[in-house]
Image (cartoon, helix red, strand yellow):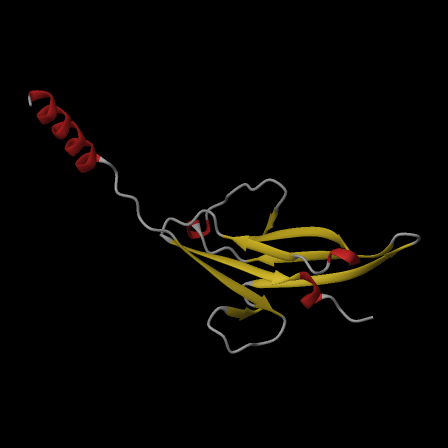
Length: 133
């Protein structure tokens, strides 16, 4: 009986002293080239600027150079070093090249440095921003 009491006391102390974790809410927000009347959709041009340039390559087909500029909303404007991302004038600039066959892919961006439990995940289809020939 003493052993049972000791075990119950140990389990109860673990339950009481275990850290309480805040719930993280992830919300996916689509970026589109045109205005869409949807709560989970925003139009490019405000916080996100997306430029695409067609790069024809002989014998390889078309490629597309993407440049995504993001005005960060985290850490109160503090400087953060992110490998592979240029930061100019407070904006993150992400550049990448995609083959025409891969334009059905999506691009995803999130503010990983959030301190609150709400984490918006911004995304778009690459093909939505490709200029017509």
